[in-house]
Image (cartoon, rainbow, N blue to C red; front, top):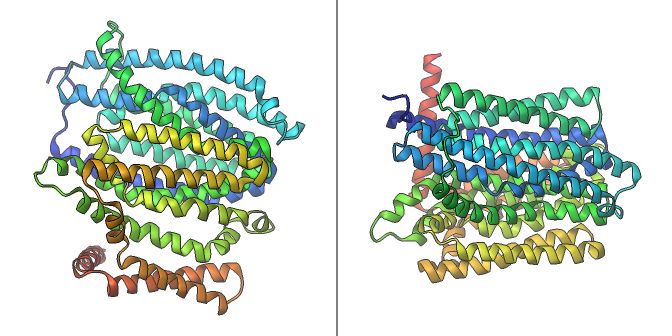
Length: 526
């Protein structure tokens, strides 16, 4: 094979990359959950609720500025994969990578200008929520975050290159290593320096380390050189259009994810941001549980759509029932045991200050269930190249959420921010998108939801009632949470075996028998 041709992995290697990439993805979800459950309360205890609130406020503001990347990483991934699929010369790939790095350099300059302007306006932005000492800390944190934004633009390009080469093991392995090092150094570092500045410097150092690892991998593992030969106007124009759509989606996601913390920090204060961030951490873990299933199944959608006489509603219901069995159970358990969980999670005197995080989490989680259960429809839109309507809906959601949050938080506190997000979910994902799905794909949302929730809701209700009864038998948040969780899991598993349809019950039993067989084989080998 010529050195100038990209390496083509055989089918077995591609399958191995996908399988281990999925395994690492689940490990990443588990470690991120571990970070949220164990490391977050440790950070709060070590740096204090006020300083942690300042850190989260500035982190949200800095994350919202990441929209300047114009979706560069996703664009690079798409075109690298396209080049490889068409067997393009490696020199052409190297030229495209160099063009992307030049674009990243220009965007870094733009980001620097925006960060300087934002830094000069920090005092005006947070004068109503932060005192003088907290504002000084916020400025120090923002400086480090600004440097990280510039570096992250370059790292995005390299991450897109590796992903475009379908090296999922390397991509997720590097991310896995990053979160492990972050957990380790956070525990060690905060014992020496009890300041949120340690967290931002640690993230910046890890970002540089990951950047170096990606450079080495691309050069020596992929054997891909980066060399600027000529400026390809055609591919730049094509990728720029694609980046524009990615930018709009990224803008909406970033603002929706960070708007609440920014407004809460500006209007209320650092301690309120800490409480709201705790709720967002819980909500983030809840969303990841739902996306874990869809992330494995969604790649099959493209092949499914090629089949004749395919029934999109049946396919959505099939996946949606699996997702609802997971997230529906989590929601039911959290509604019953959530207060005890937060008490155990935060512990000590902080459990009283974080009580509101329970109510905020419930407000965010309930409408999200309806979107997560049918989020396979998003893959259908992408495969059908019908994203314009969804983009317009997301922009409307952003405007609505911004209006409710900006005008509501000064009057009703952070509950207005949660309500704005929840109502925008209902308006956008539940009403507008389901109307579009029905009109475009002959998808009947009410009937689909009824089929997705069928029988499973009875199992969740029985399990929740059983877990709730634990409160009358035992005392103490720790005992209530762990005993209640054990009862919920036991009753839920038994209920599923009783109420599930025969075909679904047989599939579950088949998986359990297969797992038991593999476990027995391992014991025999040992």
